Length: 454
Ligand code: GLN
Image (tube, rainbow, N blue to C red; front, side):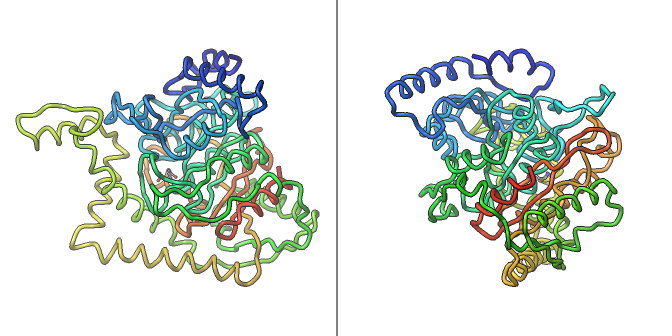
């Protein structure tokens, strides 16, 4: 009741939720209450969560914040949310996001932008919460849920976490099932939690993760007790600092934050080593070929026949065209056009194939660092703090917006786990985050190290 009241009070100004499931939340809480009384509580019994609109929730609004999925209520539940409910969690509603998870500011949503609960000192200017999981980050940061689900294809968990002073982890590709999560770029998409602190993130990920026969890319490996990793000493741990992440024109406060993080880990007994990830500079351009290519294929299914919106036409082809023209927003259309272009017969070798080769090299850079004994890599999470809503610079040039992902996309390209953890405030009092990158399936080391920083 307290969370629902908080949502009803603050959501009109934050726009973090696109649907609030009052009745369902109360019914689920009642069931939890009974279980708690009987001593049968699950790991998340009664914990109220917000769910990104990308996850299919049975009988409940699921539109990936797109007009084209108008009125869509799936008859099935995503594996990730089913896992959370099986552990007793309670659903408060569906969270706003960039349309089909394409964006870094939550401004591409059909439902309008999400407002970051943070303000710069002495300013009333509205800031973005980051994207695409902007609703998840704003809701957690603004106390409108105890934790949230999110997804990360190129930074969409970690960047909004950094912009809102919350913790977000993208686990290793394959750790969580993608079944029932609306597909953006299937070889990059991963679900993960956004939470108020590292411990909450560890508890949530344990519930969300599972191998699943319905997603053959999910991996059958034991899921450790992540919470137990928190508080373990990091003495002797080798922390890699990649020199290629020291970008030209990097703001001084980001560099200073990075140095502060290095100092904290050193103080806790870690050994700091300089490393090189030589193909880093190709990650962003390669990502913006691979992700749109997969998106253009995944989004072919929205044709006005199977789901959501239908805009009639004189024949079926015109109906497809009218539906897709009216149903998709500008950014989604841009991605579909880039994707079909790089996959077309004349350009496939020059763009798509080349990007896939670059991807292999990026993965190898990380493998080399880990083989040389590095346990974890420390970088900034974002190149700046949260920027303003409708920022003219960002919105005039899509490439400027894409640069927000500069520190995060490599992790998706390599399939590795990455966590964003709050590490301080900038000069104007806005949160900044650091990122830790780990070996495949070694999320424990990320939780262990992030806890030293938080
Ligand atoms: N901002 C990136 C994009 O727009 C990443 C999105 C994501 O991780 N879902 O593609």
